[in-house]
Length: 284
Image (spheres, rainbow, N blue to C red):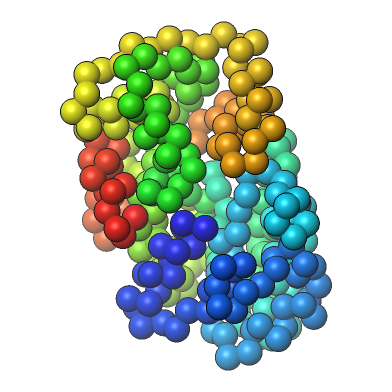
């Protein structure tokens, strides 16, 4: 994923040799088939740090049987157990803000893997770190592309939740930089990372439009019935970032204390009003 690519770039800048274990990488792994400790152990030889950055908003049955229960829970759990067995103590799990108190399959499965890593850490078997960022902005991100496409429209017809609930967007490259510094510290447990400004999705879209030199959009609230229908329509298209799961996730605030990101980044993160340039940067 695009966050994993940003992480790999930052790690290489720090002098690490990165083994990118994805379906597209040279050391290709069918993550959906990695359900046992024995599946993972051969891949952990001479490895010092393990990062699990796998994530999907919904089931992807066309990618090797990659349902969310396997992707987010069973495979990571087996990976973490394998790390404990192989002596790879430092493990980072990329989770997300909002997984607590959320009943979507996405949140439930992410939360289960988080809990297993934290349990192994409490038992002294691993030095586990669970990072939960707010919405991550980057040129390769599906949500970012949705925001950019909507920002081109002079009239915005948006669900009420996108005009009411708060997000705290963070640039992918800055999140990766902060995560690498966290990795190199003794920090364990859950760390929430959000950008310097809380705003609604509608305000984020309007800001991107303004940064592109366009006039402020006319905003119209989509009725609830139409909102539910649009989410169900999105369910039919696997590549769509808007679906029933994203509607449920968007129905809760996705914000946190901004201080930790600034601390681990070592500077004030990019604010939403300056993000368009960062989105188009080759490093994002």
